Image (cartoon, rainbow, N blue to C red; front, side, top):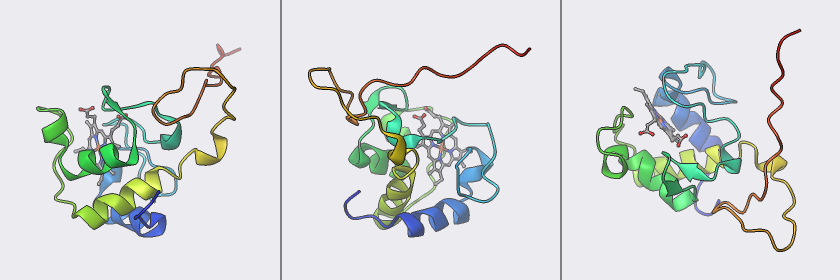
Amino acid sequence: MAGGDPERGRQVALAQGCGACHVIPGVRGAVSWAGPPLTEWARRGYLAGHLPNSPENLVAWLRNPQAISPGSAMPNLGLTEAEARDTAAYLFTLGAERLPPVPAGLPLGPNQAGPREEPRIRPRA
Ligand code: HEC
């Protein structure tokens, strides 16, 4: 992602306590299920259920969630523009290596991810 440093973003996520509410791979202690898990972020089509999941929209969300979803339980953590860009850059590394190749002629989601694998959820034996 242009203009953000993923390693600094990982440190921001740690320092800001995002892990108090989110599962975030690579961030120590980020194992809470209070909010949605941020695993495989690069593969998400939507942010907060209604915005296309673009880097710019993620930066806007991180700077002021309430402006996008009034009444959201995600607090405004007062991130600077630079901190938000770095954090967004880190989140967009998650799952990026698993973006499937895009078959020609298919309608694409905003993150160009193309079709998803079926989730591998099986009943317990
Ligand atoms: C007090 C708990 C809390 C903290 C702390 C928190 N969040 Fe959230 N976050 C939430 C909740 C709850 C939602 C779902 C809100 C919604 O969709 O309105 C959310 C949503 C999100 C989303 C969108 C998820 C999706 O599936 O669309 C992202 C990305 C996110 N948070 C990143 C962060 C980052 C990065 C931090 C740290 C800078 C952070 N959050 C700190 C509670 C929190």
